[in-house]
Image (cartoon, protein in one colour):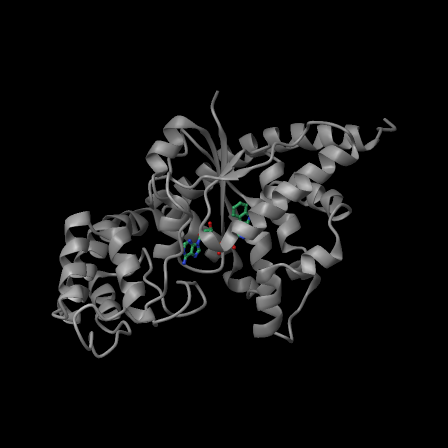
Length: 331
Ligand code: TYM
């Protein structure tokens, strides 16, 4: 039986290497083997109060970058979160099952409170509930995500289980990460610490041109080189190796690892290789982004087609949930 796969990306900016390798790689295989739903999480992006002037343009940008990465609207269901109002209704219902204490303990919520103490809105607190609604509305059982979304996925399983137990049904499956056969990954940023993120200014975007990519990689933080052969790697250098392992072949990685261990590595060479291999992956995607982004007709037809299919599946789930919860129609 085909698995139901669901993947989401917030419409807060251009897609970067972290998004690509965390959630989108192996698109082709994923689409051929499963029933895939891919959507743009525009409601989730509202927690940071984006400018209404750019709001819709951001959605179109992510849509174009999604498609340019290899998504095929003939095979997968592609839609925008806010165009499927059933998601918001399920979110309301699931909020009744989510406890404030567990939401407050979520790592991402605590981090937002620390970083943006003046914008601790309720949408941030219930962010994992909306994400659970996204997943459960299609009764997805596989969710491709990076390491940073692991806890949110775990909470989705908790909510699904709680619903099933509370109403004594086997309605929602407990979704697992689609991990591409490996551990969930975290692509680090180029600034020496932390993950690559849209708002961190430490990323390489799928839409970057070659010159920009080379400049960013050559400026990536390193150290002054291994003091002696076999010296342990510093965090920034480890991070570059993580990216190298993701974009380059095994021989290239072991060549540079050997150089490092021998105390003979030249970071300039490592960065050049890294930039070459990143360009090989992203530049063809960039070309397609440029083609697709201004094709308004293609973008709107794709979404219209996808939204209709997504709403069909969402309406069926929502009807099931409401029946289980005891809603009855007056007419
Ligand atoms: P977002 O938009 O921050 O990221 C989209 C996807 O990219 C992955 N990702 C990374 N993976 C590895 N290394 C990184 N540096 C990195 N940065 C981002 C994320 O893990 C994610 O898979 N809440 C979600 C969007 C969402 C969603 C969903 C995802 C809403 N509803 C339902 C899956 C299912 C988010 O903010 O992702």
